[in-house]
Image (cartoon, rainbow, N blue to C red; front, top):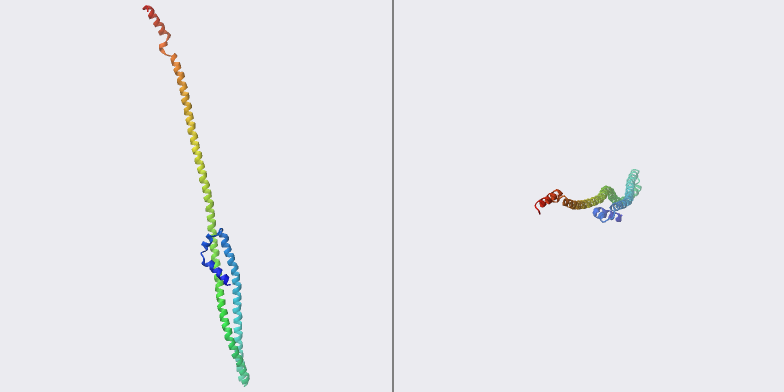
Length: 228
């Protein structure tokens, strides 16, 4: 019993949240605590029942002794009425012996009663505290479930952020590809414009008004007239 009381006191007086922080799996740890306490409760119940049974036995012996004392008193009175003082004396002597025994039985009963009261209080407190721990277990498990859900959401959030980063990279690559395509198109346009200018210049050579055949003929006729 001393070991049970000490272990229970250690658990109830300790900061159970600090103990759970050190555990790899707080849910399993608190379940184990409660299994241990339930096992201890069974032992406390058995011990309480034994102490209460001892109290009942002491009470029964005390009541029987008191009844025997009353009986000796009645017999002594009857013997006196009958004029048998010798018998009355024997009954009174027995009564005195029983009275001495009664004092010891009373002391034993008082002690047994105190023990029973203490054990009953301990038993009731253990049940109450186990109930409180059960409520705290539900709260802790609920918090653990929320925490695990939050962890999953955090991982999903990281994945979403990673996907956003990949999309941003694709946007940059697409922008670069568009820029390269625009530069290539501009270069092709410039190259096409240069080739067109060369052809136009060549054609203009033959389209020069200064080389017109009519002007040449008129110039030749003028030279002939002047003897030049």
